Length: 203
Image (cartoon, rainbow, N blue to C red; front, side, top):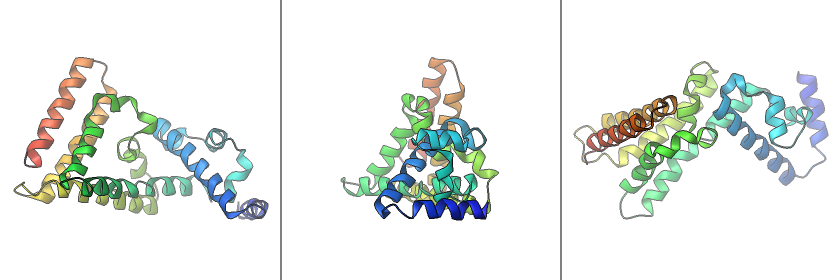
């Protein structure tokens, strides 16, 4: 595998840095769709590369293994907390960032966005079986989410606990909604989750 990686890396040296980065980004975007839609085991390297418009041979010029790719994919979720926080800071209150995140999770249509949804919802079970490095990347992403929700919990009696409970309710609500087939029950579930989150965060 190491020799293959060196050969593929040598093949890629002739390209510009911009081309190499753009190719890596295409692989990551394809992998994100397939990891979310099919999980770690169901997303094959051949399919990931085909989704990026590339052949399997170029994969090892960018990633050591599928495990390495999965770890990078999970780590990209670090941007979630920062982007939501920045969105809130541009508004009148930090609460706005958390409100947007809650709306994103608990809007009924989100259950159909499996391939474009949140990694925490789609791949937490995969991460639990992944390498320590992947779990650390996931933990950092989760901490970013906790910070965002914590900003909205200042009115709660225990802000840190309220933020964690709100995240668990949002994520769990989406997971259950995606598994249900009764539209009325789904709407009731997500409405109940939203009411619970509002109570946890102090209104």
